[in-house]
Image 1 (cartoon, rainbow, N blue to C red):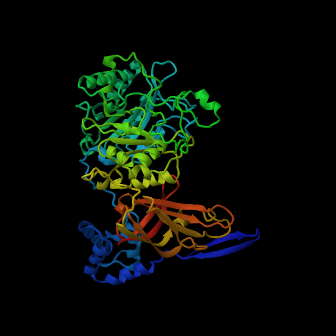
Image 2: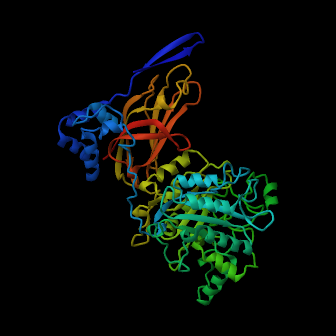
Image 3: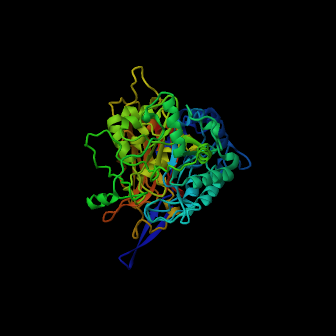
Length: 610
C-alpha cells in the first residue's frame, strides 16, 4: 500500500493511502474454480476465456511451470511459481496486456481476394507536418505513418521553382516543399517496417510531360524490384494483397495523351459512352474572385480556380451533381503530352484514378471490363450515400472508392469514417497528424487483422441479391449480437504520471467511458461512477450493448479524471474492433490522445458475447 502527501491551503499537508491493485471478486472466483485442479484450469482457459486449443496449451504451460523460473513468475516479476499458480500470479497474468491481450496480433483473414474487397489504412496529404495552409512538408510524417501501419501514402507532385525537378507540397497554399526523391527514399526504407502487405502510393499530379517522365524514372530507379508494374491494361480485377506482398503500387490518373488514346479506342469499339472512361474531364470550375466576393468564406485550396464547398451547402438543391473538383485533377489538361512520355508514366499505374464529370450516376457507373478508383470528398460522399447509397455499395464491390477530407479542414482535423465504411469505401483518407476522436476510431479499426493495414470487408458489403438489392446501413436491422463489457479496475497512472498531474491537492478521481461507434442504431456511450482520491480505481460495473452490425462496430474506451471546476483531465483511451475482441477477462492497455501507448496504464475488463 502506497501513501501520497499533498499540500493543502499552503501550510497544511494531506496524506492519502492508496492500496495496491487487488484481484476483484470475479478473478478470485475464477481462481477458486480451479485452484489445485489442472483440468479445471484448462477448462477455464478454453471455456471462460475461449482460447484456441494451441493457446490453451501455451498459457497452461506458462501458468503451471514450476522450476527454473521459466513460467509466469519470471514474466510478471513475481516470486517463483509453484506447480499451480498462486492467486497473485493468476491475477498478474490476467492484468498483463502482453500476456493476456484483448485481441490477437496475427494476420488471420483471407488475403487472397482482390484489393477492392478490403478496407485499407489510408493517409491524406501524408507529407504535411501540421495544418493544411502553412505547415512544412517533410518525409518525417510519412515515416511515422508507415511505422503505424498506414498502407496508402499520398504525394502531391508540383514542379519546383526552376521547373526542373519535382517537389511535394500542398499546392495553392503556403506549405513549404520537400523534394520528391527524399520522400521516395524514406518510403523505400520504411515501406514494410510494420506490414509486409502492399503499399499504395497515390500521386496527385500537377506536372508537365517531361517531369512526369522524370517521376517515372525516379520511381523505377528508387524502388527497383519493389515496384509492381501491371501486365494488363485495363485491369478487369485488382490483384490481391497476398499476391503483392512487399510490393509498392502506384495509383493516379492516366496522362492526358493516354486518355485520348483510350477514348478513340473505345469509340472505335462502338462504346461512345464518355461516362465509361476512367477520367473524362474536370468537374465544375468556379472563378475564385467571384467566390471571394460572395462572402461565403469557403477556402480555396490546391489552385486559385477550385472551390471547396462546405458540407452544409447545397444539401437540398435537388441536383444530382458532383459539385466539388476532385483534388487529383490538374489545373488544366495539357495538349502537348507526348505518346512515349505518356506510356512510360502510364505503365507504372496499377490503380487508375478517374472521375467522370457531372452526375453521381455517371461517377458510380460500373464497367465490367475494367476497374478503377474514384475519389470523393467527405461532402460528396454524404450526398452520394443519401441519394445513391445502393449504387455506392455496388461500385465498391469491385472498384475502389477513396474518400478525403473536405477543404474546410485547414487544421488537419478528420471526419467520421463510419458512413464511408458502412458503404464499402476502401480508402478512407485521414490526416494522420490530426489527433482527434475520428483518428482514434481509424487507429482502432486497423488494429484488426494483426494490424497489417488491410481489413477484409464483411460479406454483406460484397453481396448482391437476386433483384440487385444490397446492404442498407440505414435500414431497420435486427440485433445480431449483444456485447457485455465489465470494467473492473485500472492501474498504472501512479507509475506513468507525477502525483500532481491530475490534481495538485489530492489523488485523481477517475471514471471510465465505454461505448460503441458503428451504424447509427449501435452508436452509444456510457460511463462508470467516479472513484474519488484513488490511483487504483475499482469500478466493477457492467454495460450491455446490443449490436445490429457487429462486423463494423468499434468499442470505445476512455478514462477521464473528474474536475468539478474545470474541464475533465484525459487519462487514456483505447479503441478496439468488436469483431476481434477475445472473450473473457482481459487486460486493455491505454494510449494517449495521439495513439501512443502508455508504459503502465491499463484496465482490467471482461468481454462476453450473448
